[in-house]
Length: 504
Image (cartoon, rainbow, N blue to C red):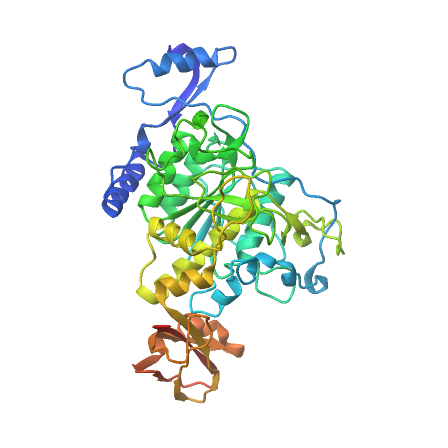
């Protein structure tokens, strides 16, 4: 009954050709059949039309495979404890990194600081796409500045409430907070950041479209983070967005194209294995390839009470007491009204847990590219995180282990050490040095060291040359020594970053 509808349009803003291209490229890469996203439509009913009756009618049509109405959508964060206010600001903002416990060594943290000592350990070369409602410019988030950060369909726009902006700001701060002397430092601070609104002026609330836009923009190895939850399994409890088939199809297309998708499990304390979930979180029935993230009490690996759980949950992150940008409820506030200088020590929920895992994934992809020349496929990366993580403790339902980057990286690529050797240079430079194991627990004095790669990076006043210096360097690797030489014709200071692998 066409007269019941105000409008019927494609669910996606990408053209049919673009959607079909994503399908075909994903099928070629993954060797599996993918859904045709171009067959999804967004139907808006006229006022007064019975929703249930219309859905029943549509489902009875032979050419209709699925009809869904997404309900109870929200951000997967828990209320913060504390009053409003602001952070520091500029040179007045203290260094809060000592309070970012999730960066620390396993088993309480993911050992991001260890990863930073490795070539690619800052996630450089990887783009992370944050999918939610809004964000705010911030003194500690250079990645949110500049054109091209927000991904939108041509002619579209978006707006978000202050709460939604604070949420996105907190999420981004966990991942790409600037590595400076104040505020916080993101776990994957070298990554490029893009944001994709789930609700826009033209397309309304449309998470599947946001995922497709990110997928179309991304390259294999990049990360999509889904920071929204919805009522699932026929009730009012929160779970992952991929319960809904349109989102599931968009996620499946992304992972088939080599994009890692990380998604919050939701704050519903819901058993995703319950019969009410209709097997939609049973990997034997369907598997989007996404990494579903639960939440633990900070530093404990014990499931926090609100986290949804079940066999479909792959890993977990800190779901309480996460220090990051946004909200402005930190006690050390200096400028109360300047939101660009707000910080919080209490970001929480599967909202705070998921960026920690997204950062771990971004770091793994960057290091994989450094070591092998290509990123890991999403399924292999997901399995590696789960198999090498710090096991969950306590009870209350399965949320998987906490990622352990040191263990994961050493098992994937061997014992790795990065050595930095600054050498003053005038016109030419040449140096040879031995690399010894020792920066990892997996290394031993009897380890056989094999140099994998050597790259050149600028330091000092001419650091802007760092993007071209690698192409100007000549690197010679021989056994456990490396020689780097090249004539620059100018006096600069340079350093060598050397990735080492051993049998330790």
